[in-house]
Length: 101
Image 1 (cartoon, rainbow, N blue to C red):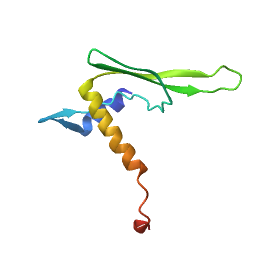
Image 2: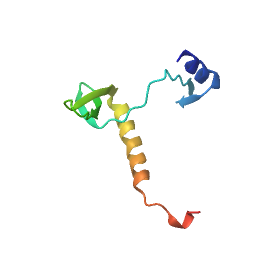
Image 3: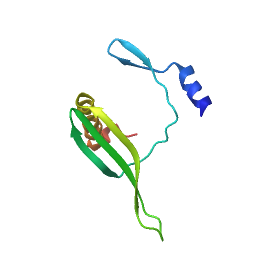
Image 4: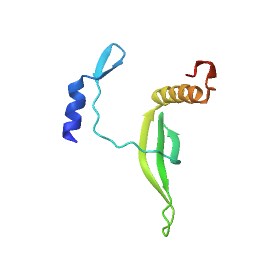
């Protein structure tokens, strides 16, 4: 994992926030596919959002495994809302068949 982090730092990948270029550091967090909300609330200007994966394994009781617990300010929650809205809108657009190969 340490080699992976060094490789990412070595690529010089950055993201611009305002007028500053920030170095992107990937600590090797595994991707997950959440399928349930286990916490969704707001309090004192923060949004609390916890996501989980549902697991059904024959012979065992079904589980809901927490995969992430996010805490974010309302301004970031609004940015996330807008970004998700754009992604979902794009994904739901019909495919333009005239541009197919």
